[in-house]
Amino acid sequence: MSNSNPLIEAIEASYKRSDVPEFRPGDTIRVHAKISEGGKDRIQVFQGVCIHRKRGGARGSFTVRKISHGVGVERVWAVNSPRVVKVELVSRGKVRKAKLYYLRNLSGNAARIRARLGGYANELLTSGSESSEPQGD
Amino acid sequence: MNFQIGLIAKKLGMTQVFKDEGDRVPVTVLHVTGNTVTAHRTDERDTYTALQVGFAEKKANRASKPEKGAAEAAKVGTFYVHKEFRVPAAALAAHPVGSQLGADLFKEGTRVDITGTSKGKGYQGVIKRHNMEGEKNSHGQHEFFRHGGSIGCRKTPGRVHRGKRMTGHMGHERVTLQNLEVVKIDAERGLVLVRGPIPGPNNGFVTIRAAVKPAIKAGNNKG
Image (cartoon, rainbow over the protein chains, first blue to last red):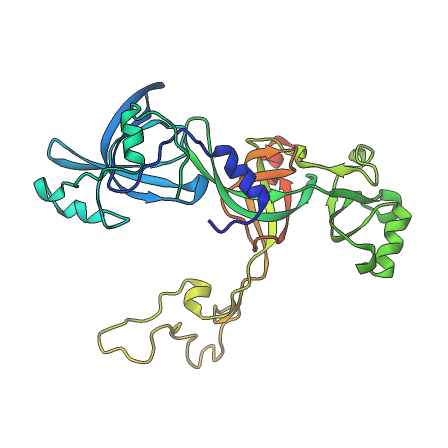
């Protein structure tokens, strides 16, 4: 984010939320997303691996990938979107890339990500993965 | 003629906002604090009626003598930008000289027209300037890839048609975008958030007016 104008940053700050836990690419997360269908809202839970995380303060976004009935499904959300009701951290993964697009070409065991212990994972998992920790970049 | 009153604004830059239902909207942030009515144009004196508005205050020691003289006579400050907005004669009384115009002139969800000076691109070829296609990159083509092709005929007419699109200076011209949605008004901070990009660089000056096309339809655009 290259905006240095304080008025623009004030607008963006008003859309920032602090209730999303820290998570990084490779982590398995559970997203409670609001879905509007026929004028009604309902919550859909989408659990998968975060394969992309775009920072950029209020404009950040993330992609979650899961295998559903043998088909890869990816969804992209803005971190601060009102449609993201809740994000839960399920487990941390050990990866060496920031963007895990290579997972799209792998399947089965090869697409598995090894767990990483320690760091913010311990705290969040023991506290029912609902505590809100400030997002550190 | 546009008889909608408007504001001068500074383009601060772009960001995004969320609507309640979750839609992400790209917006340009315009700062309008400090729009001051600096003069009236009246039928008796000028044969037309308008408000002269000043924006972006200028230090008195930077202003020229004529600028200072006009400012002192009207008891207002000196400004970097002045702009006249044609208004009906009846509207002059509502905005006396020295009064401020703010972001609350516009309402969220309405449409506005924005006029600015586009970013200068310098001397550009026909592909960038006129969206021409250029030539093939293969099939033995050589040395002519980004040319515009033939520019005319033969003995008849024996000249190039007037207005033939060729290379030249691009950008840095007056551009008006019509019917842009006002996404949000922040009257306290003096901000108008307009959907989408607008002409010119950040920190450049633009003018915002109520959109003329819906006004014509509704019959509200007569002096």
